[in-house]
Structures are given as C-alpha cells and as structure tokens.
Amino acid sequence: MHCAALLFTQQVTNEPTTLKGVYDQITAPTFPATVPELTIWARLMYSAEEAGLHNVGVTIWDMLNGEQIGTSGGPIDLPRRPERGHPSNDITFNVSNGQIPHAGEYEFRLSLDGETAGSVWLTVIGASALN
Image (cartoon, rainbow, N blue to C red):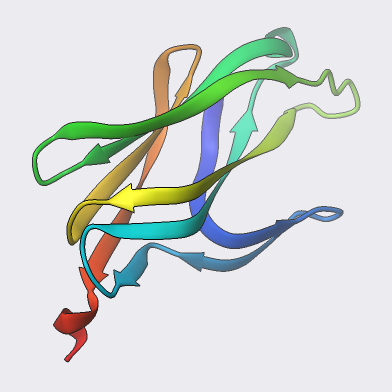
C-alpha cells in the first residue's frame, strides 16, 4: 500500500473526485495564527490483499525546530474492489482551528499502519512579508 497523492485543497467533491483550490502556501495576518479550516486529500493505492481495516494518521511538524505540533487519525476500512486491478481509495482530513505559532514551513506526514507513507509541506507567510 502506498500514498499516490497528498495535497492541500479548499474543497473536495465526489463523483468524480474533484479538487478545488489546491495550494501549498497561506498568509496569516499575525502570529500565533489560527487557520479556520485546512483540508488534506490523499489517494491510497493498495493490492486486493491489503483491503480491510488499517490505521491512518497525519502528524504536523514545525520545521523551524523539528517539533511535532499536532496529530489526527484513526481507523480506515479500505474496500475490496474486485473490478479494479489497482484498487484506490481517497481519504480527506479536515483540520479546524489549527494553531500556527510563526511564519515558516510545516510538514504534514501521512502514516499508514504506523509507517510514513508520504508528506506535504505548507509554507506560512506573514501579511507584513507581502508589503
């Protein structure tokens, strides 16, 4: 099993899966900042033998000091898909009111059954840096 894609997006719709507003940078007016909503979308690819219950999680790392500043996750049931030679499943993490201590880079690591499967970086800049 592996993560084929991992992105920040403003909205995910289904049938077919459509991502709206993909990004990797946000601006905050002041720090510490509260991010009202952040959506992380991932596409998992797996074999027929890997269908079933697994643990999935996201940890958030402050790259300035290398500290973990947040985590989310839980069980996921990957469906059996006999009609597909390469089964896939999309998952979405919604982070509400996330706290960002300062401008800089943050790594969001996706784990599957305790193993890192992918990561995506978010750059946060201060509004004063735009002037």
